[in-house]
Structures are given as C-alpha cells and as structure tokens.
Image (cartoon, rainbow, N blue to C red; front, side, top):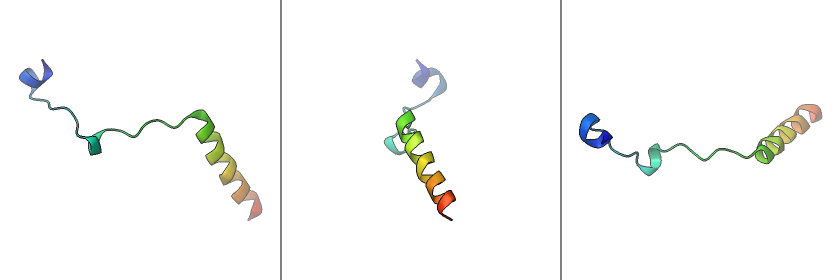
Length: 40
C-alpha cells in the first residue's frame, strides 16, 4: 500500500541500518576504552 500511495520503495541493502550491538559487545568496547584510558 505504501508503494502505491506514497511512492515509497523498500530500502536497499546499503541504506538499511546496521544490526544493533549486543550488551556484551558494548561492555567489551567500554572495557577496552577504560583500559586504554588508565594505561595513558
């Protein structure tokens, strides 16, 4: 229906958002950043 009424087309692969990071990924990234901060 959106395609006919609003002339909207589905997003191509490069337009789609990246999958969300898991909580474990966020913790790992923050842990690495904290290690670098305290090493400096």
